[in-house]
Image 1 (cartoon, helix red, strand yellow):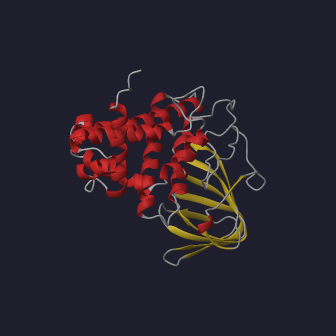
Image 2 (tube, one colour):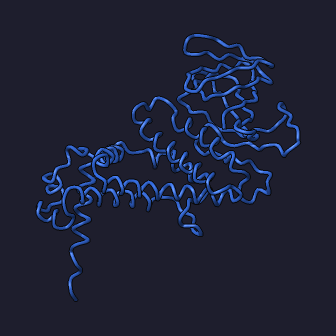
Image 3 (tube, helix red, strand yellow):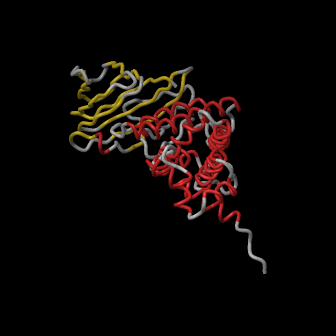
Length: 330
């Protein structure tokens, strides 16, 4: 029998060596000499199998993102989408997508090259386009009544949040950025309508795994909600945010009116830090305080109305379980 062609194997060696170098040394440190040493092949062979440096980086871009695509959780009957909305968000804002500083260094390097290389820029745009299309396909399956333009806008927004979360977490890992981004995902998908199989009674917003915001159940149109008796969904606080006691929180998304989402939230006794989103809320039960960065202390009691601003840092201290009705931009 004849020997199989060596080309694909040699290409794989070169691509693996280039990715290893980019992860360790970035673009400036990834020289043909280093790739040659790590791959065990001469510079002439590298040029023979993959062309010039730009061609090599295009091939690395396509190969690296293809590897990431192969790792995506897939729906067996819908291979071009995620298994579910929850699985998609857990992937995009979980450790798999945000895990590797070395991978971030690699992508940073490719982005740097893409600014001056149309070929690399196009390869990266195509790669992220595949992921955006997969997000859109998942949303379209989960929200069959939503218009195509709304699905596309939501998919783009979720992708931007996921990518921004990756890079900002690396710059400042002290903030619960994934939780903050997931809050915004909740609002992005809320206007898309009821999820498939919900018969119109389930919330437009999904449960958000590994976040501070699982979804609740909106009231049917025209039905009043007892803000004190309504059942909320429990979800964990980020342990790093807890400053005293063992507070627990619960949350519900009730719906969207024009451009405003609304729902309920509660917290048991204890203290925890938070980075706020834009919000107005009314306390309906309990007592405690909110301490702002400037030292201002807000006393919380039934009937108190509070305005919070995006990005401000607060510490919540609850002495009697607090429940609030909140309103935020959708």
